[in-house]
Length: 449
Image (cartoon, rainbow, N blue to C red; front, side, top):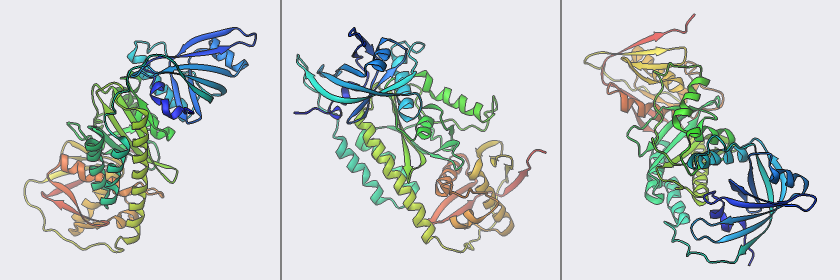
């Protein structure tokens, strides 16, 4: 029976280093350890190229190699016959292997030594089992295909993005036992991701941001490729990612408007799957665990499939909303609120909004809130539609929709968490209401200069 690479992916996790054998043009053999054999697809694998060593020199001259891979649970051994094709030094494959290698290096105390120079891609010519004693394979914790099917049902039952995200994260916990997860959306300029939903953390972190290319989440979005790490690594930690994100934005030490990104302090396994629709990255589905080696290749497959479904569902919801949304604005009015007034400051430079002295939100969501408050102050209006937001020049939405529904979810949740004076509530498809529970004084702070 022919064995394919798909059947032995557990051997390629890097838990037990693999052995690679090559041969020089003069026939001299060389055997060495390789930090990682990375599954590319059913016909290809990639080996880490960390030093210009004998192995790499040999395959450049004689493109044949043999790898001995060992299953970390059953101790079953397999020999892979390989043909060298190329070395990649950038792109999704390189970044995925770089992230995984960083986790292996941190776990083994070799963080200063293991540095990926390239990903050597090989065609798999054959997989042969090596005779020997082995342990019984452990019983899987769950049937991932059945879990995926159960999670997929949330897309049939949810016609609202906010409800869909809530149900999806709940299904991840119920069906996959994934207790810490979040969904982040990519802003229209394609520079930053912002959190719109999370589960399993003391603070939701809704509104927190991370720059494209920073950490596991940022790299997954940048490369449009899933990134999975099985061991804690300082190189991809939250603290480092947030610092780099702030530095790129020119914020330096001025982080008073930064909402803390939710996350485990002792995160030891991480998986980020890009949310893609029609070839465009919309965001990232991210999960993590305090356990080493929590997420396997099969978990990665399942999460990538769910992220793909989420992307299609989000796009379909947006198109349906654009088609059926009421054309005119609504004329709802609310009597002026009573009680102690609250000051809302809007900084035009970045559309950041403070309620009293507390930071609330910035960017598109901040511009939306100020438009609502300005219309309320002028006309007493409380009923609005998504369509009018898209057409209002004060909000400065980009030509390509910045996923307006996600921005409204973000604003709704930030107001619910941070302010009792102002709330948003959905009243129908493409409709929502501004609830003003205390008198509001809107203060506009113009751009400097």
